[in-house]
Image (cartoon, rainbow, N blue to C red; front, side):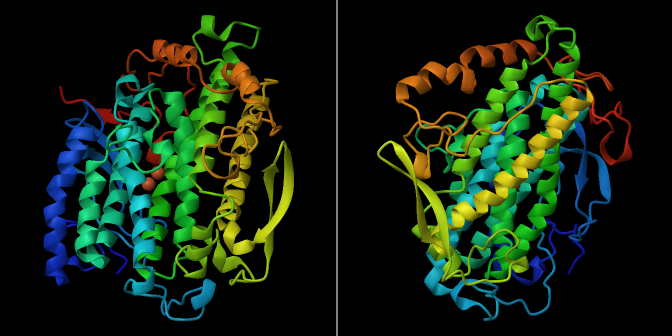
Length: 471
Ligand SMILES: [Fe+2]
Ligand SMILES: [Fe+2]
């Protein structure tokens, strides 16, 4: 089960050839996927050879294979983590029952919604990032961008496999719709807010992969606990791919910060020095962190309670917790009453989005600490900070209200007065554009606004030819 059959048209470890109906359905979807990839995937680099990794097995260390491939020839496929014997539903009202190998009728709509919402984010991010190759700061970064892109494409495959296998006709329709929506399109946008925001420069890309891909990590961790076994096993394998995306983001922001700190050490003006001003990095962090917090959904949510009670979506590392029903406990939220924040207890199940957000916030705090250690190392006094989770929210209890990055309530007017200090401005965007007018494409060459990484990919040197241009 663990090895992947790369000889079939659709690489897989699910014995696809045993299910002719499913195989045919996916083979019909495949050309539409390639059409979408050619139209909406990375612009301008489809004929080039990119040093990509391909999974050779679904074990944790199954990433043995690296080689130069053209992106349209990437072996997208269907890989599930192996079954762990007799899996049970591990939380909620069905705890102790056998995990479902088919969709339980009562939860069909809820499960489909979960899968479609997750699936929609995967092609969306590829669309958001499609122009970035033209301003890549190095071949190393260009390669990392494309690795992220092809894997998001594979994540789409993962969700489409579930839709085709387990949801019949409406699943097939949803799979088509996943290729039809477009990030940022006014008529047919992607489902979730952050996935309709433009990612026009590499600072945004690195913040997106740090914060928004990290939301993905927590959604996948919660779904990896699911009582619907095929979903749990799919998400478990996706998580092994996701780790690299967050690495790209975290190290990318860190390399920008290092470069800025070094170039401004003697008090030089960052713009005159051609690097990214520290405040601009902080504003981008504020934006992408707050957009990503929204993706977890409302703090007090009947859907979250239903998903947990039904055994569809667990908590982060649910299997390591002591108690799995969450029936008696309560969770303290801060709700706005008048012009004050008031503590309020809600049943724990209703707060499951917030519980997952807590795990995410902790993880983000670790990332920021690592950035600040890097700043300290290069002798800078600058420090990045995460804004309050109430800041700039468009979903949940704090949507439509105004909070400072410190979490203090403020007026709409005061927020507008400070907007340019707290969130990216047109001027920031224009400055990033002015830095990123071309790609740096000679091996070992780096844009002057970012430090080289400390090591290359797969043990290769930093100046390795990660992308070979075929023109
Ligand atoms: Fe993904
Ligand atoms: Fe990702």
